[in-house]
Length: 192
Image (cartoon, rainbow, N blue to C red; front, side):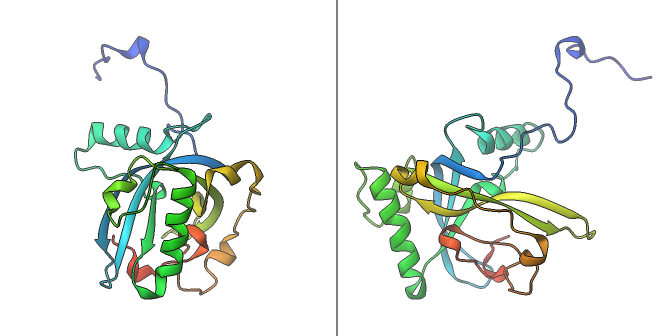
């Protein structure tokens, strides 16, 4: 026989996954952490953890992270709350665009080549729902950051249409991974 938990009567029931899913749309976001890391193929990249900071979905990724840590001390920040910016000469334009968006969104910020200084900065994030097939060939979807803009552009951004599974798995080699500014990182560059 199961023992009734002491907090049974005061605990809300969790049905389904127990957390809200971020719908496609445009959100004010904040960088909650940043580090330089290396992809599996050896390319340098910025790993930028972010969260939504306004509206109904404010704190969605940090809440998931904190909940995961309650049962797993080694829990990692949710993958959908991380943006990867490849570094290197061939990616300079993308990095420069990211930095300019952050400078425009945060007038007190001036880029000084220290990735730790990105923590706490705001930006406008454009998120799209993307379908994919999991390992069991089941159709799933997730909402991913696809573009970063200056905050002033947030009210004027279009809501992007859903990316259908056939497009995600079209043989482009990116396995559905994309990063801001629409630049897909090769699967070998994802560090996990």
